[in-house]
Amino acid sequence: MDQEALLDGAWCLVELMVAPSQQGAGLGRALLLRLTAGLSHPRVVCSTQDGANPARSFYARFGFREACRVRFGDGPDDAYLLLAADLPLGR
Image (cartoon, rainbow, N blue to C red; front, top):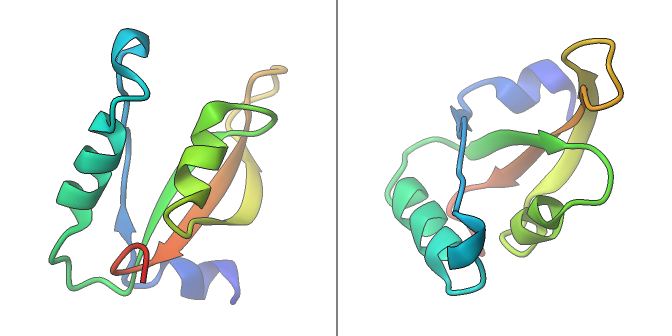
C-alpha cells in the first residue's frame, strides 16, 4: 500500500507514554485498546523512534507494521518509523 493510501482514513495516535516505573503492568496495552476500541477508521498510524527501542516490540504485538522511515530533523535522534495497524487491533 502506498503512503497516501495508508494515511487515507487512518486514525492517528500521537503519543502513548507510560511512566517507566509503571511499564510492564499492562497499562500501555489497556490504554491502546481502550483508545482504539470502536473506532470506525480502517487503520491506526503512529510513529516511534527508529532503532532498538521497546515501543517497536510493544506495537508489533498489536499488529503494527513498519510503513516507512521518516526524518523530523537532521540530528542523530531524528529518525522515526511510521507504523500502521488495521483496526480493530489484534484481529
